[in-house]
Length: 107
View (cartoon, rainbow, N blue to C red):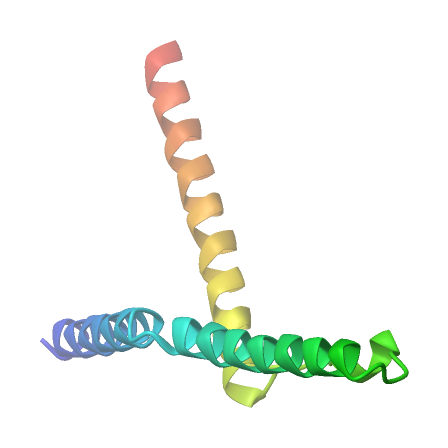
């Protein structure tokens, strides 16, 4: 019975992790971030138009902002490694199942 409880616990933890990651992905963080970037872009367009109206010197670098953000942290690295291990494990399982099916069909 201990193996059954351990397996149930692991499956429940995996389910909770899946549901929470699904919720976070659908919570709108990305859309909010894109909206903020759009607002900044609109402000820069207005500033550019004002500079053109006032005959000021115009340099593209003043109006463009390049943000090279990395979102790597320990948690994302762990989740990525776990997902890659899961992919490899499922691939091995599927190959083993098809090998056994192949042997059954050939016999």
